[in-house]
Length: 62
Image (cartoon, rainbow, N blue to C red; front, side, top):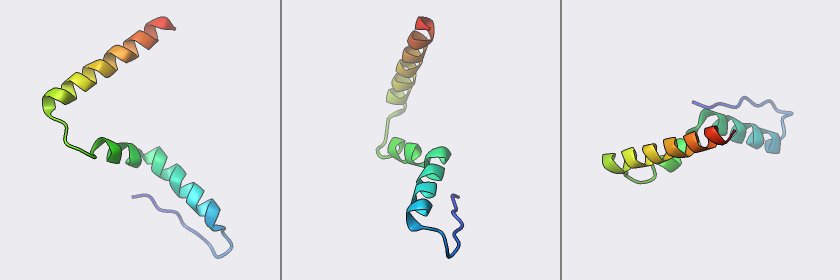
């Protein structure tokens, strides 16, 4: 659960920026985008394998 504690003197734009930062760090938006639609288990395996191939390609080029 992401919480931002504010005081009377805190500015709203600061609070919004801090909230967005905490949401991004927690990975909540990434998870929501991933769960936006159902992915069959076979498709999930294919996506995972493709991501692993991309990662190995970039690691070898370094």
